[in-house]
Image (cartoon, rainbow, N blue to C red):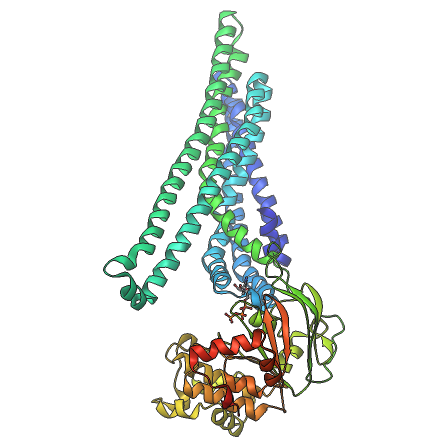
Length: 583
Ligand SMILES: Nc1ncnc2c1ncn2[C@@H]1O[C@H](COP(=O)(O)OP(=O)(O)OP(=O)(O)O)[C@@H](O)[C@H]1O
């Protein structure tokens, strides 16, 4: 936990170390102040009022010093919190900016959002509100153990042995609690997901589930969350009770030893001195358990914060894409995959295997294959959403790992299915492709992508705000804006995913027009669904289960009666294609 905290603080870590030493010193000071009670009481009980008064002054000075130092510790704790909020957020931001683009799935971005907002607030509050009492609560009893040893060694020994026992019980209870906490948070996240899904998918739920049926998934999720919440409350209560039992048991043992010793000494007719010492030791026992109970009380808060820190640690542990020390420049607009193997997770089989593919500058390659065969993944690898496991990907004859991210991005334009539109106007969204594009270039991209027709329908034309993620536009309209954005960028390589779902007749025409205009001028790699696109391609590559099974021109592959011919027949049956209708 401390290590993650220090990692999170980066160059601000010395502030945290200083704070920890201050908190430990505060614990020591508190312990010593409590220890000053011993001479005050022993002298008072022995009738030495003057000596007692002197020690009382020392005690009072200690109390004032403790109070003043505690304020300093809290100030230092707040300083650490501010460093977390200011510096650590930037540090996570810098780290995330270097992560593979492929990492940014909706689940990961939701996690990141939660960690940077709620999680950071929780972590930032730790030093001032939780660490100070926990650190001092762990140090003060150690000082009291030493004093107890001096007063009555058996009590000192019991208190000393109690410390590791208490730590072990605390750690075990925390471990059980953590597991329950994780389950609860997982179920809570699922419930939120289900709630959003429930709201977004009302039309589907009502159409297919009938009355009330649509709430089934949501109810199941709420039920799971309720059960895990109950389990969490039970375990949390049990751990608090267990911790305080252990502390109380230690206190009882200390009291018993002291009382038995007092009885024995009084019975033996010993003088008052040692008996007074024992009475004082009895009082000290109480001060020994108090900070321990404090620590136990903060177990819950520590566990919650630990989960947040763990989430941050997981994000920081993801390896960013390495930037080359001596970046190279691409020589042309070719794309080449050499013996590429890739898998999304180490425990999964390879998704792409032994892929060799060369796309010459200015040529057009269409990728074809069943759903899940790896077409999108192949395109993502070219744009370096991820790095390959073995083999290499070359853009312009240079391995993408030897190019800066900026240089590679400059070589490639993408029209993917999940293109994001920002909360801004249509014009602003298109200009993201090239912020310094002139108005004439903007108008040309708009014309080529068929955005003119959309703009004409909109109340504010090009200045129409598209809403978050382009929510105020249809899927087809969003895609055409993304085509205009890719066209205005004017990169030599264009990767296109012909999204079947978003392709209405107008969009098909826009894509076909774009492709025919750019054919021969740009290197085009297209995940093709349209017959017109396939017929336009210089080469068709058929992927099956992550491997290239067939490669050649449309006519040659069609004549082979292999996978491609079968694919065409399926498409024909589904969409009424006419093979003869090639342009
Ligand atoms: N980020 C990811 N993490 C893990 N698995 C993934 C990820 N993205 C895709 N996959 C899996 O990889 C496989 C290939 O997906 P990919 O999107 O490359 O196929 P595709 O041929 O483009 O399919 P489609 O035509 O349906 O878009 C699928 O089984 C998919 O579930």
